Structure formats: C-alpha cells, structure tokens
Amino acid sequence: MQTQATAIESIDNNGKLGKPLAPWTYKNPELFELEYEAMFLMRWQFVGHVSDVPGIGDYLTCDIGRDNVIVLRGKDKKLRAFMNVCRHRASRILEGTGTCRGVVRCPYHGWTYQFDGSLMAIPQEENFPGLDRSEYGLHKVQLDVFHGMIFVRIKGEGPGVAEQFAHTAQFFEKYGVADYVKCAEPTTQIWDANWKVVWDNYLENYHIPIGHPGLNRLVKESGEWEDLTSGISYGVFLLKDKPSNVEIERRYQEMFRHAERRVPEELKGKWVQFGFSPNLGIDLYPEMVDFFQLIPLSPDQTLIRAWYYGHRDPTPEEVELRRLNILVNDPVNEEDRELCLRVQRGLNTHGYRPGPLSKQETAIFNFHELLRSRVPVINLRRAPRRGSVATTNETLRENRPSV
Ligand code: FES
Ligand SMILES: [Fe+2]
Image 1 (cartoon, rainbow, N blue to C red):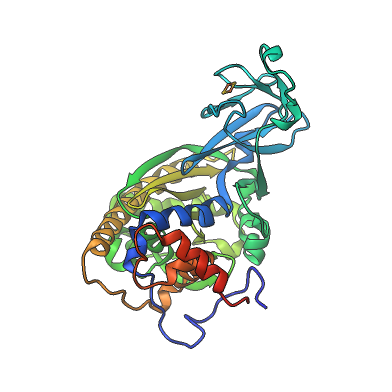
Image 2 (cartoon, rainbow, N blue to C red; image 1 turned 60 degrees about the horizontal axis):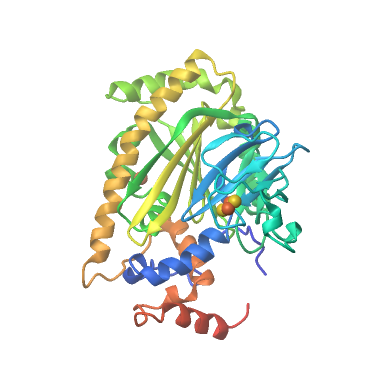
C-alpha cells in the first residue's frame, strides 16, 4: 500500500502518457460545489504565519471560499482556529487582523466568547430561558503549524501537514522559515478562470521558455524535482550566470549572491518551488518566501492571494533583493494570468478534446489523480445531466472498488 507521501516516478502505471481532465470539469457549477467540499474544506489551507499572531489575544481571519476562519492565540499561548460565525444568528465576528481584549465579542448582540471558543456571556440572558451555554461555543477548526506556517482544515481528517511534506520538509528547516516575519503586505487579484486551470498552470514548468521570457532569462530547471502522492511536488531552479539584458533582472542576478549568506552551500544559486495541491504554491528564495494561494470563487473565477515572509533582520541588500524579486515576478504573474484566461476560453469552446500530458506535466497528472480519487464523477468524459452531478458522484463513490 502506498503511504501518503510516496514518490511518483512515472506518468502512469502503464508508462502511457496521461490525459488531463475533461473540459466539462472546468466549468460545471455543480461539480464546483463538490470540489469545494472535497478539495478545500477537507484539505489543509494556509492562513498565515505564527509571527502574524505573536501575543495573547492576537488574531487573524482568513477567507477560504465563502467560509472564514479565525486563528486566535489563547491565554495559554496556544493557537486555536474557529469558524468566524457567531453561534447566535450567524454574524461574522472578527474582521482582518488584530488583538482581542480579554474576550471575543460578536458585534451584533454582544455574545462573548473566551479565547478557547467557549461561550462566556450573553446580554440579557434571562430572555434565553434554559439555554445551556456549553452547547454554543464557537465551532472549532483543526489547526496545524508546520515550520511556523499555519494551516487549518475545516472538515474531515487525515494526515497532518508535516506528514504530507514528508522528507521535503528539510528545505523549510534550511531556510529558517519558522522564524520568518511578514516582509510585504499580502496582495489579491481575481482571475477569470476555473481554479484548476490556475493550479494546472502552476504545477508545470513546460510553459516557461515560451510563456515567461523574463523568467527564462533568469533561471533554468536543475533536474531535481519530485512528486509525492500526498499532493506535494517540488522542483529546484538554478539561477543562470549569463547576465540578463533587462536591467531589473540583471540587478537581481548581481545582488543574489548577497542574500545567500544565510542558506547552506547546497542551496546557493537556487530557487526552490513547492506545490501543495490543491491550491498553495511556495517559492523559497534566499531573500524570502512567497506563497501563491488560489481560492475558488465560482466555476470561472478564482481569487489569487500572494503572501511574503522573510528574516526579521534583513540586510539592506536583502531588502533590495526582495524588492527586485517582486518586480521580476509580477510580470510572470501577469503572464500566467493571461495564459490561464486563454486556456479557459479554449475549454469553453465546443469540440476540444484533451491532449497528452508530458513528463514535465507529471505534477498535473498527479493532481488530477487526487481529484479523481476524491470526486469520482470527475472521471466521466461528459457532464452528467444537470441536477445529477452530486448523485452521480455518490453512486460512483459507493460502487468504487475499495483499495
Ligand atoms: S449574531 Fe452574534 S450576538 Fe447575535
Ligand atoms: Fe507560469
């Protein structure tokens, strides 16, 4: 039996080129709901770093689709996560980030909760005869901290984050990510594409030479990469020595060596890129880490969120290098957006049949296999009748041979 984090070595078990998902799966509203539950509510979602909530009462909130989660540091200094929904009449309780003074108070009728989520007080409680406060604590959400990165899982169970990263966790240790702090404000964008189009694109580097000329001037693949069945994939890029003819890129190349003092010898001259399916990209640079997270909004709209963390005492060179990094990578992001929109338009047309996936697209194949196993209706070549996607999925799940 495969463990959660077995390495995948071939494209498929028969050595045949894999095929991506059928086009209908990239635009179907009923499937979108099933995916949201299986792939977003039931899998670990990155929501921030422990340094964002350092003190007692500090909190952050994070949207995951239409859900929103609070991460709060309790009086015992432990982090806990809750659904950001009042148990009285469903008001959202906290916004953004901040510090709660003593209690968490709902702004609607003033129900107050302890930092451990238990319901503490209700204004005019005599009007709720017989109410048992112990039944109305905030709904708890699973929380896991992996090298300082906070992940939550709203539903379901399964292995922790460290188990999914398995041996690849060593990279985070080497860069010292556990001690990082936010080094630039997070940004958001909305792309008019299905979330899987965006994630497929993130997972492959085959498009870099054509789709990202600037990136292609800066880096090349090292040949070191791995895909794990847990949904983790990573690849290592080498910074090219040949000076770029574009000034910002050339300055980045020149300054890069200044930021390398902190990384061990084996990581010098490199960028390390992780994909944590279904929706988190992590780029480890010597000067910082960035997170590229996508959150599905609708079958054809996806929220793209970027986060930046780095050493808390950067040298002036590292500060400059971070600035250059963002200037170099922003156009790459824009190129990706345009590529994704092109794909979505193509998937919406009649008559397209999926082409083959190359060896460089193994991570996509792996991601699609994960989807096929979690949402079996996605295996069908044509969409089930309107209104029957969920029931078809259930039937397929029940009839599936157990593994
Ligand atoms: S909805 Fe929160 S106190 Fe009423
Ligand atoms: Fe790209």
